[in-house]
Image (cartoon, rainbow, N blue to C red; front, side):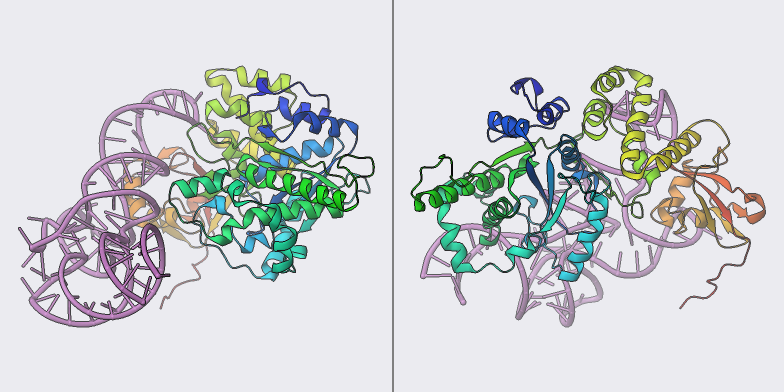
Amino acid sequence: MGDPDSLPPFESSALKVLAERGFIEQGSDFAAIDAALSAGMVTFYTGYDPTADSLHAGSLLTIMAMRHLQKAGHRPIVLMGGATAMVGDPSGRSETRKILTTETIRHNVSALRKQFSRFVHFDTGADNDALLVDNADWLLGVRYIEFLRDIGRHFTVNRMIAAKTYRDRLEGELPLSFLEFNYQLLQAYDFLHLMREHDCRMQVGGSDQWGNMIAGVELIRRVAADHNKAQGQDPGEADAAPAHAYCLTYPLLTTADGGKMGKTAKGAVWLDPERYSPYDYYQYWINCHDRDVETLLRVFTELPMDQVRELASREGKALNESKAMLAYEATRLLHGEDEAARARTATAQAFGKGEDWSALPLIEVPGESIKLLDLVVHEAVKGFKSKRDARERIKSGAVKIDGESVTDVNEVITAERCGEDGLRLQTGRKRRLRVKLSGEAPPEPEQA
RNA sequence: GGAUGGGUGCCCGAGUCGGCCAAAGGGAGCGGACUGUAAAUCCGCCGCGUUUACGCUUCGAAGGUUCGAAUCCUUCCCCAUCCA
């Protein structure tokens, strides 16, 4: 996690903020980047794979950085890797690459755009409105021979295999397909294209992308040098084609216990509220490890640094308030004030000692009465993965109703008992919700 | 195309002179105790179903041999390494 002390002092407000909050790992040329960012609006980009129709918390770091840069007056380009998604990212190991249809990608892109717009502004009429582009628009039409001639000749394999992603594969004697090997060229070409089309001067992204990013910077420099030579100019002369491109990387965040940010054992922490409710999102953050509190506050909230330091300095039980603050702020950024407040209230109710759980979701299960075992594994409740599992858990006291541990698997819950507001059901350590029975006969009497 | 070594449960990884293997061990996960909805620790669970002893479905796929196969045979698919 970038050591802020090892960075040079910056002039630009953009880099100051990023450095202070721990967003910076490596830069192609800090002095030049700083100067460019001080001099005026810089267009920069970060790439994302539109392989799903929602982002997850793992992408949040780069999104937050984008937000800071835009706030400092710079213009973000969100690059959708519609074309490269079809190739597969080499840094992602041996993932089976999904074959995405153009329709799927189009659908994903528009869904993702909505999510980005919670963090950066697009169409406000400001100079630094963000842009969203899809590299399928220029990559799909690329012709092989031309590409080799114009782009390929600027790369030496010697240099390419020095890139960490490739080097690891080669040294580990793991397979590296030619297709994946080309990923770097494609990404470099993206940068060149954005430079030409949108005057994009900087690429930012996770540090795992360093090799690819620097390849883009070098490609731009070489192409410009060629161009200038053709024009009979020395590079750097007044009229020379712009050759100054930069890149900046963020540290790869891992959680204190070694996990990936934005992933839980159960899967990704999605930004889409349909996939991952604001309450769960809030829970994700508030459940962070003690040692992560400061980093997370710095990176995923916009609280002033003084406050961040104060919150992070708390110890023991008091640190939980800091986590609540983190969760609230992070949820607020994504889902807005109301949802964040609701999640906070629900959390306070569920984990407090009170009997009022009114802010928690009320799940309605059809039926007049139901056995506890069936209730707890009902698809609307999903307390445990199977009946077998549920049986074990119930016996060991994992289920509580209205605060009381219930260990009888066969206990019958009736609609009457649930009442209007439902029972306070707790399944396991953290799962809490309210349930009630509809009182009507279950609609699925027969089965095939 | 040839040679060799492999494909085991969420992951890693034992297990092949056939039974005692639902399959060692580790990790992850889950539940309990403890606590601060933390960490560490301890205990338990960790294919599915059932009134826990049984039943059912698993060891790349499909067949076969056998009373009985993850373990033997056949074919096929896939992966790695070397050769072409």
